Image 1 (cartoon, rainbow, N blue to C red):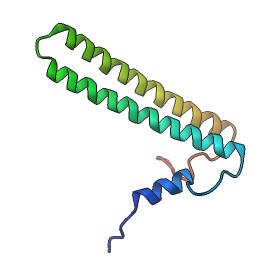
Image 2: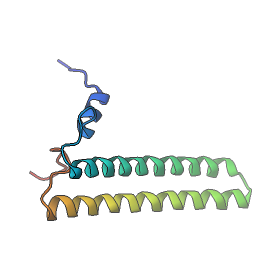
Image 3: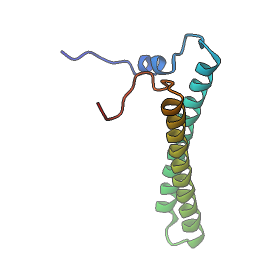
Length: 109
């Protein structure tokens, strides 16, 4: 039997919408999570826009150059954002021992 899952409910649970932060650390953690997700989404949008510009540029060298720059900057932004997220998890979870993932595990036992 399949049980429908509400994405809004899952996101609300992940970010704890509807409940007030229990501490300053909780507020900071939620804020940084939202900023990182927003940055990833924004990078993917710019990557998509660069791809569209590349396809529609035709033989125009200036448009191709602009599209290539947009794609490279989007990929650079995505890489920086993922690196910042990795450092955030490493420092906060591994060094400080604070569970910032809300029980979400990726790989491992």
